[in-house]
Length: 425
Image (cartoon, rainbow, N blue to C red; front, side, top):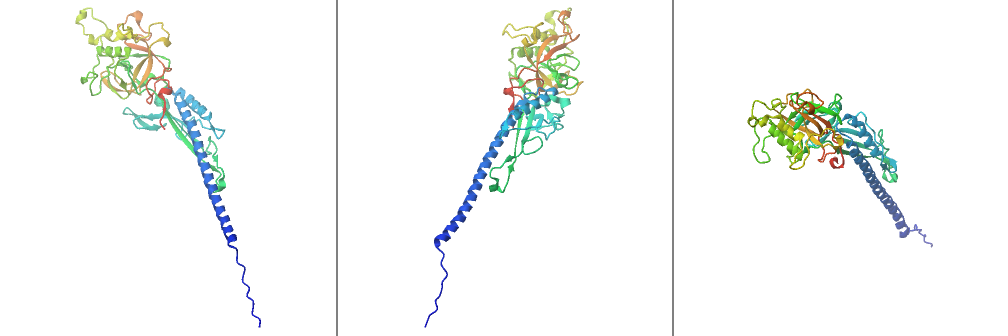
């Protein structure tokens, strides 16, 4: 009797099973490694492009702010310089693009505005801010001297005027992504000095240092008169506190010629106390200063506190003790050879201003000037200024000289250089 023969299915080889599993695992690992390599490569590329953009924008902001000197006529130069420095850099061998933003829109690539030290923020056109407690609306025609900063914003993002987005390497490993966007920004601050050690004891309203178009009167002759709210003397007192000798300041607003003369000698030799923006000071328009020495009163009996010749002495004469030059430039001397002095600018932004007689005002900036003439009512005819009769000061605004102090405040004609411009963002 035959027994049936049972046929068993062939057993798979364990080796073949393991080889199949290994192939699947290898494929998974290959995809994972490829994705990580693609991610690392593209992250590195993204960081590199951001550095390229940031370098270009930093240089653009610094170049632009160095063109600002308080005049609206320099705005175009600031934009052009900023754009030229930006486009001088490459992004992946492509020229970096940046829009001029001639309308100075707050959303533009190149925005001119004001950096506030106290608020620690940037203001653009139309925004309200305070300058030493005075409310001001940033507006180029009415206050171009407030523009002390340049902000740059842009990127490789495909927006109008910008570079195209950056290509992604091995995008198949990253969900078939083909590009990524990179943006950057920079903010540079320049402007005029916020303090000065050697200012003249003569102050001028901010509205007096600009022309009818609100442009700082660079390299122009300015004649400002005492007693007409165009110019005033100060003794740099007015704030509560004590002087350099520890004595309390007097509470009155009066400014005497002896005090002005002392402050003028300090400015002439540059040994006075440092004066700062927003410092509150006394002013006097010199109406009650004596114009002439009385021939009826002996000289020894006259009060030197109110004599014009007392205050004019350091303006007109050199100091034999320390060799310092007179404040006033000698007649016939070329302007480039004349001494420069700083004139404090007051927080009066609209002319005609209120009375400057026995008042208290705040310093909002400093301007570099060459004093070419100073006269009182008693100045001899041969020594009078070209500006006419009365007590007045004639000077030129120097917009080519750099400040030795860091910038960051309203700019009334100062040129900027590497020492007083900086990046704040």
